[in-house]
Image (tube, rainbow, N blue to C red; front, side):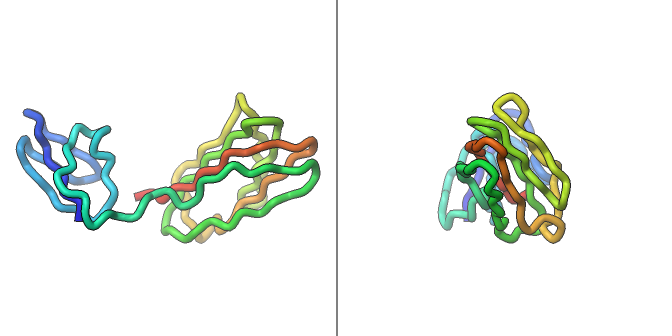
Length: 134
């Protein structure tokens, strides 16, 4: 399991886990160690990535694409059209996205969002990211 150490003089608290100064913890979940100020002292065995799906989806004008979302109890979906304008459909609700207005969901239960649909009237490229919410 990855081991994370607090080499600072302050407490570090993340997701109901507290590291006192100098304290190490062995965990079975992903921890954004660098962002928190922790030092990863052992990396093995590696934990699974929280990224479930990350791809650039090329949409042909008028042709919808359905993207299945790999299972995780709770997920977060982000999408932005890097070219053109597209519509992201989640549970029958349409969200128009382009390079100026992307979309990031709140944490969602996977049972309500097993797939998403993308379509564009003129063609577009959409960067789609689905992450596990820990």
